[in-house]
Length: 141
Image: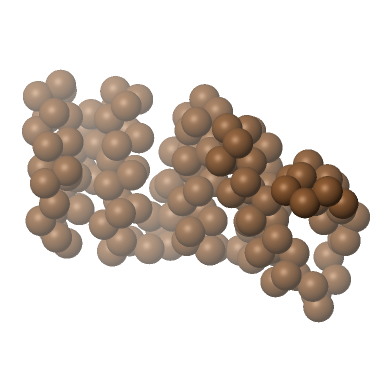
């Protein structure tokens, strides 16, 4: 296998299957391949690889965040928002997850939902970015 070839690495990982003994290793490998796909601008492949990583390592916060980012970058807005909402359910007190959900709703012109999520962020911590987004979303309603 040629070093730095995420396509070939992805294909080889698909052939591993679901042996419990290699699940963690496979999940991490998919995650690293996904990061390389994303760095190369191939967000659709990155989203697929992040999804496979989650198959082996479910509910990993960082993988879910990156999956949402790759879905968003590949114009899969609804799926990205669904992933963000799932992340918020897993980590309801995570201001970063809440802010990203607020931002997604604002960009989809769902301003009331954006306001709700910004308020949740600000109830946890005072963030200038959340205050600005709250003001922008509230004025757009």
